Image (cartoon, rainbow, N blue to C red; front, side, top):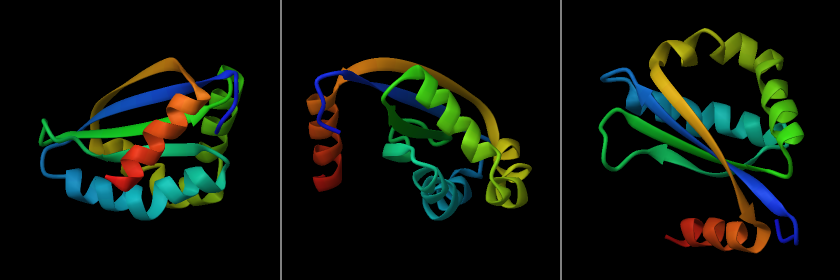
Amino acid sequence: MSDAAPWLLEIRLFTVKPGLREEFHRISRDGTIPLMRDCGITVVAHGPSRNDEDGYYLLRAFRSEEERVALSQSVYATDEWLAKYDEVVPEMMASYQTSVVPVPGPALEEFARSLATG
């Protein structure tokens, strides 16, 4: 991740329909997050929100807006997404918001490392 150019940190905040967050997390952890990584997406962190029983977050990093769009679309075009998640995942969500902010590569790397070590 280290690089002089800033990365784009995509912050997605999901509101999962009541009672479905545990299953949403299982599907994310075991299915959609590995799929995103297989498609070349840098997943920095994901998981249940600590302050909202229906909240879930996903942090992803990209080198450019073009890469963000292309890699995101590539996930949704895979046979795996279409067969396993295309109908299931959207139905579990009440809503979501996305924000994209530039972050220096070294700062993003340190943030990811601190999340990994707890």
